[in-house]
Figure (cartoon, rainbow, N blue to C red):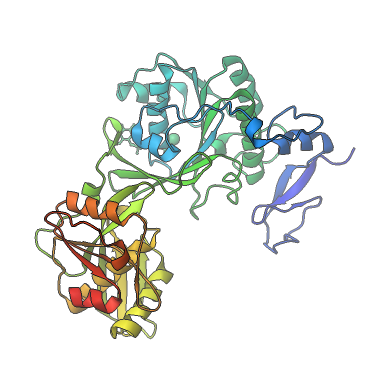
Length: 453
Ligand code: TYD
Ligand code: MG
């Protein structure tokens, strides 16, 4: 019998029989950690995804398979349903990541309390004692007669108990506190987190239990481990938002059962997390007066349009290499947009520092922000405010053209709903029929947009 341990690189995931100071694959220093070696018998159970895997593999026709997974059981919290892709799927494993103190335990306690009325539930906490959890639930006024608690960190014991309790929904708070007896390394290490998760995933698939895994984000902004968890689970949700602000956003990073980039919006109150059903309102900081450097954009997060304010500050630079600072969007994108503005708009910013911020801690991941970002930059540069009833969206191409973005009509309606009277949009997104009270300016090229304001 060979050694049961192997060494796994936390950077690239490579597995080696011997420890060394530098990973032979990716060259990272000091990244090898202990892990369980994959023996022949384990291979079957681990990689089939289902324990006690079929001895002779069977090939199916797609049409012969009757889905046994139940789609979309509502969590009772509609913003959470939205990011899950319509509700909770039986047997799915969901990873919820976020900074400490952002509200992961609060959200899951609330969701589990709602579930406990109709389904068997089990809340496993390695961080808080049952008293602490019960105190919180009581303070939030949650009905929790059916909610079962377990304070345990050994995954083998957890699964033994879970097999007796047979919950439909289970929470592991948090995955970093859980360890498996198979390994000697400390809880929270990459190997421990990965092995424990693998066992939990197997359990979920076998028993049809939906499992929420809470994961802390490290200082570098990733979940402990080289994102090893992300491809083991079905759904990955991340809490976003600033600690100081009351609002909490949950974004879908990966979802095997629904769309990604869905955004759920919550507000942290003294009664726990409250859903925000009209999020556009909170991201618009309506200034008393029109201010230079501010533009309103209609973005789309998952399936919902959202009005967001982009702010920019352009200031004379005393550096050889002027600053380009972005918060809430990609910096390369800003560099590119400034190049397009110079080349096709004739306005150079090579002696200016440019700062761009998306208000409310929102992160823009789509190209519809291009035009509004340029307009905000220009507005600050010229020190001339944009009209306060103007909203816009559109992608800017390298040839100086304004390219269409998906769901133009929906975005236009969202702007109209929030009382915007003027909208600048790509020509290809121009509506066939006019919307009452909204003056639509369709533009083809950057120069048209510059003329329009
Ligand atoms: P928590 O859910 O414990 O965070 P996590 O599990 O992500 O680490 O949330 C803790 C924070 O939320 C804490 O700073 C206090 C705040 N909070 C409220 O403001 N109101 C409440 O009703 C609750 C329960 C927490
Ligand atoms: Mg917690």
